[in-house]
Image 1 (tube, rainbow, N blue to C red):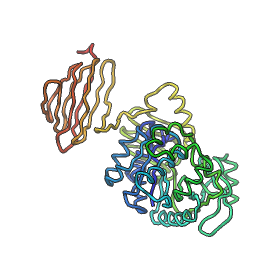
Image 2: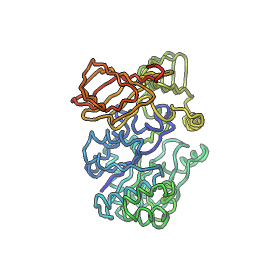
Image 3: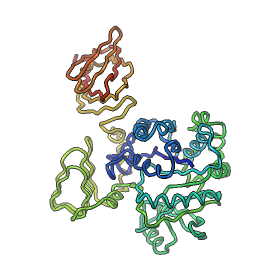
Image 4: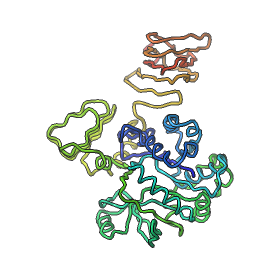
Length: 448
């Protein structure tokens, strides 16, 4: 059995914490862990680390690799990096080719496909339902897991149940995100489930249906994994739901009840699942509410104080404060599109950015200068750099490093100060056992 974790989603409705290059699966929204880390914890109750394959993209690769490294080297090695986003059907197809060709898996092996950013509890119920799904998948079905609705939700797709076969049902049809009126009708009729986005099937079953309904994708992966990577952008951008599940005649659903599930797809969804105080507030971080009710207030760094407000969502980061009424969570995507049109950096990056060697955080950015804090991991280095337009002044606040220039090499330590002139080729390495921390002041030539 193999597990595919799809970790390439953007999570735009959780902006401003979620950004284009730092999406929601890396956020610590529940239990003090990144959602991706919690996903790995959960699926390790089903398989061993060597059986977990993560599909992501180049923007997220180092975030994923860092989290995988906490579990095992094998998980780090089984990261598939898509060259371009093409939705879930091509992602799953590419992962199937990877496990057949690279991991030498049997095509009759059962695989599970999980999003990287869901909340699912308790673990015992999760394992029980997944085992049911595996048994159904072994009957040559494409299996989806459906959640019994507890409210008329317009943010989820729905599954209409067909023939009941005990622990599972044949799927009658899939329904796109409905209006509130239709969602209320589905709840009343009682034969509709939320689409969880979790799947299981045999590799062979999926490939047979891929040939039937998405031959363009199959023809590309059939030429081998490396060729599929090279030609990945030629694949149609289509989800497994639209591309295969809605067309196939071999789809079954395992109904899930008495289990907490959420895709945490919006701030409203987070409010629903988090514990509330006596005034109905969800308070995260340094928050001091006065006469405040039924609100979600998330402080990332600064103190947030509120007086006499109700039904608000307030999200604070280093560079953005988002304020909206509860219930408007679905409108965040519209705001993102406006900000994208204005080419706002706040849509793309946080002030802290991860790289192969570690991470950096922008502290200040003014006319002619920029101040950053660098964190270089032990044994890692910043490859050779050459800056024609600026000089750099480094102040070492922690650790030991080595600076190599064109004509010399020397070591530095905590408290040392280094000036790197413009047009100077240089490379820096952390030679200690702890992170090397440096305050870097970049100054344009006019300030030299």
